[in-house]
Image 1 (cartoon, rainbow, N blue to C red):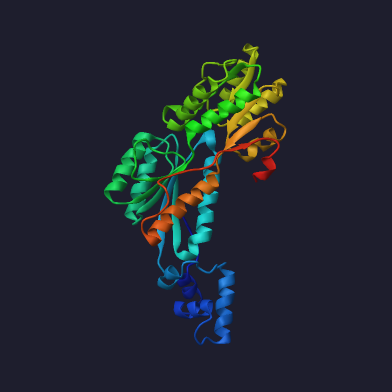
Image 2 (tube, one colour; image 1 turned 90 degrees about the vertical axis):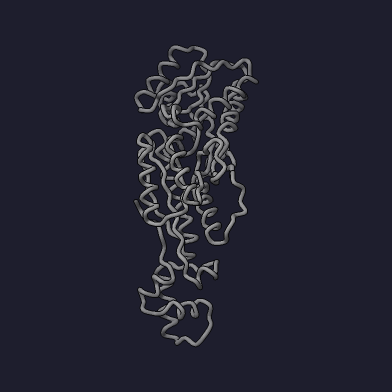
Amino acid sequence: MEELSRMTLEDISKEIGISRTTIYKVLKNKGNVSEETCRIVNEALERYHYVQNRNARNLAMNRHYTIGYVGFRSKSANYFSTEVGKGLKRAVKEFGDDGLSLLTSEFDVENPREQLSAVEEMLKQGVTSFVLAYSHEEVIREILEKLKARDCLVVLLSRDVEKWEDSYYVGVDYYRSGRLAAELLGKMLPDGGKVFVPVTPEYQTNRDVVSRIRGFQDKIGEYPEVEVLPVAYGLMEEKDIYEATEGCIRSEKELKGIYDLTYRPDVIGRVLNDLGRKDIRLVGFDLFDEIRGYVQDSTIDAVIYQDLNQQAYLAVKILFDEMCYGKCKEEKKRYSKLEVIMQENIQDFK
């Protein structure tokens, strides 16, 4: 478990031996404070990268707010943790001077009950507001019931829970993202052809993968010349993804497209390069460093992008606003915009 926090006004007060009231007077340029004290205070504020609190009420009262984040690590989407982490740190940078701190913990996606243990530990430490990114629906429902009984605030990040209205949700509409992928491939293949669909093993516990497949299959029916091959389930290791893709390309002479749900389009891009088959259209999801080159040279024709960094930031902001001001005015379901990234616009996504 890790704590993300910034120096508060009280922390700085203890560090430099000057009262919080005096520091507040310096910040507000009020009262009689000596030049020497002002110099010491201003140097400390600069040294500790203090940004004046936008919430004067919290500043004056020096309140502290702790939010717990419990998310997962996944081999099939190892960029998830990195991008979410950036958003969490951005939230602490913006609201840390308002008294916000985060307790963070991540579990192995294959051991979902570790999430329950992490939540229980945070509850013991007095945390009552949570951002949760989960991997197993049965476990998250158990967690949500426990948190509901304690009147905790919860934001589900990136993955919603069906028929659960007591939490906020920040993420995308996965069914729509599948339909969008089908529309892209359908228009990329005006003469039709066969499409290969490799899928991560997490489809068994990941409703979002199922939604993307269903959305894709529903929309691709509008392109009768396109034939979707039987879905290749259970692919996670690079070797398995590579061999399954290579085998399909060699055996299916009419293969014209690939809809990747292994979340490893870099591996599939490598197959296309190795076999000299960049003519096969490849559509995947999300953007991370390993696939930038493949998008830039159009080996990957398009990725459908969700800004996980912004989602994580927004999840924390929703909770923080409610903790500070009471009932949040945000909609319960906050769906992020889906972006299509291709060679022409990848430079816009740093």
